[in-house]
Image (cartoon, each protein chain N blue to C red):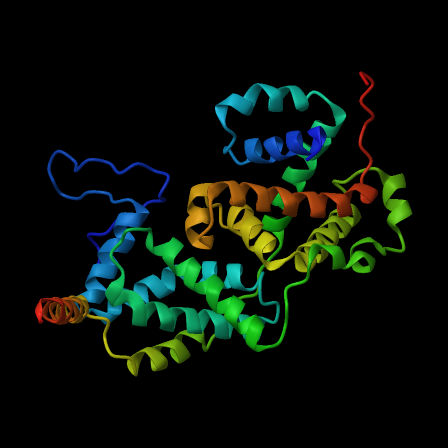
Length: 99
Length: 224
């Protein structure tokens, strides 16, 4: 990776608050140059633009359709899962214990 | 029924119970976990609350991966059904929403595979769509990215470049920029190391930035 690209990756992480402390000084120095400053500006522009773009809304029938499907599902009871897990464990233990 | 739950954004630390003990505030994660436990105890209504809370966020995420809105909605439906079925095994080791997002992304991936679509590679980005504006020159003349026209062209370019990104890069930048997840949370959702998250987000930004540069004038650094 060339030096400028590596510095831009650090600027990208800095923008997200995810830069390692040891890299902070280099990244801040890179922001003084045109390449680093452009990257900083562009990365923020990209983020702002993505957040501004509206996403499609769910259709009015979404909840009714999902409710209908969920009604046909067995409840995800934790007790059942625990019972199944312990049964499975018991089976494994029984198998292991058997000669 | 659920009035004892006061959910706050996760970044806000939980407050202690007030002196008179009348109510307390939980974090978003704790709130979700309480609802999950209610579902696991047989309360279907608690799942409806989780659906109501996350359906739009999930649609926002999935519609960035599956572009047709009707198909994206089907993927969201399927995601909730899968989550409901798997909920009995959810222990709260990760936050509910990172778990739900992971199911959503995998469901979207599977959908794209079954539709016979492959995620584009970075070498076949839709350059024509991203760069082929008749009035790109006039944009440079205007030199005011704040103007309405420039904003529209910028939005078009960013979105076209996004659509052409490989799925892994697109997912990473959507989770960061639109959903606001931390690198750690994204690494959980995408089941990859944090270093990979950092690299994917950077590569996504680089590809999109490369498309934007022709539209924008930057001041020359006189110190060089």
